[in-house]
Length: 220
Image (cartoon, rainbow, N blue to C red; front, side, top):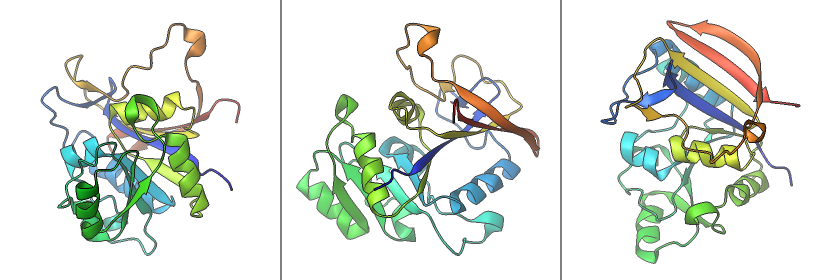
């Protein structure tokens, strides 16, 4: 059983902020960048996010390049340690969703299942969240070969700490938000620069007013 390749998608200001301190984030990057994100979704077997992103942004997570639904849609995946995803979330309107949890509450699980979720129980990892390696192994077992992660700072940090990110697609808007904005990656707990995860830049191009940078895991 193979583990899917993982792409981490980031959309930020120049100073790597994903929102104002108030949480306002629509839209930091341009329509051109958002179009490319839809194309990236369509090119992956699954799109994965966290319950916090679903609660904050209520994304559909489908691939709609050019405003038209792609013929083949990625599997939509939510990591939800406490099953706090609302059954009314928009993503359930577009069909089945995999929701990974470590200790599911039966009532919440039933409500989400009725909304269209498949509840998948996996072992707990860091801070009681669903273990990322177990999630990726399960997705690989379902025949999914590639996963794009679109999530907040905590999940982004978790997947980097797990050494699971093969590629980064980073969209940067030409604006500065400042230190009171929300960072794209939560603390990694590094004590030395030698321990910092490293990536090789493989491409940089303009995307409307934004910059689109692609990075590959160093040494791959």
